[in-house]
Image 1 (tube, protein in one colour):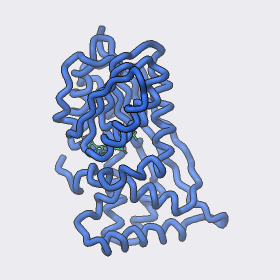
Image 2: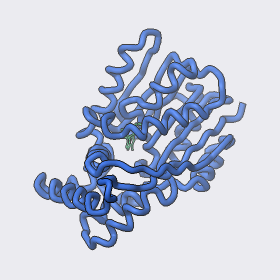
Image 3: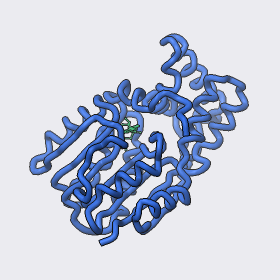
Amino acid sequence: MPRRVPPAAGSFDRSAGVYDDHVAFNRDGARRLVASVPEGRYPRLLDVACGTGFASLEAIPRLGVRHVVGRDASAPMVEVFRGRLAGMPGVTADLRATDVLAMDVDDASVDLALCTMALHWFADRGAAVEAMARALAPGGVLGVLAPGPDHDRLTVERIRAEDDAMLDRLADAIEDNQVDPDVLAGHIASAGLEALDVWTETRRRAVIPASYAARLEAVASHLWSDLPASGQQDVVDRMRALLVRHAGDDGLYRYAFVKTFAIARAPS
Ligand SMILES: C[S@@+](CC[C@H](N)C(=O)[O-])C[C@H]1O[C@@H](n2cnc3c(N)ncnc32)[C@H](O)[C@@H]1O
């Protein structure tokens, strides 16, 4: 499907230094995904769209990881991750900035592949799952975490009611980013993997509008990268005003984030 927006990695190039401060919920999701990987030792890990390394940092102590292959389209995100791994004795790493579909990982070379909060940005999600499946050794495990169906629906409805073409880009992205569990299960089956579990979780959140807006700036600034800096700031300001307008009497903005999870295994 043709892209309607500039590649997402541009947002992450800009936000690499502050990304971790604004996406604590991503880290919680990575933790729940890693906790769902079957017990065992997985010495060779592939972290696809590794970002600053949330998923790997959860997997290393729990799953006996000794070598991390990390790939991400954003070089600044990879560099943050490289710095983190440098402080971990006994863990070697091969980290590179590259698109997922050109990730250059040997077939059957890893025991575990993780892809957290990134599949939704890929131009061809099915091909990306196939590439991850090819990298798995026999019996290897794949774990995927992505936004799920109807995620942040209230925010989409509130944006649509504004009749603001620039804010509509955000609503379009929230909708395009949803990964349906059945569709993901289809990609997993087409890639020759056996789905062990595919599920969704819904978390209702109440946050201060500024923290919701800061997360958006960290992950979605590419949506307006064609505008001059002042125009980009105007859009963010309008979004912040919308969040404040829809906050409750306690000043908190409420929304529901749905996440799709999948755990699958390569044939032995
Ligand atoms: C929301 S971050 C998630 C990072 C990390 N996995 C986590 O759980 O925090 C999405 C990541 O996907 C990367 N990304 C987006 N499109 C990509 C692509 N086509 N190929 C590789 N990485 C991509 C971005 O650069 C960014 O680091």
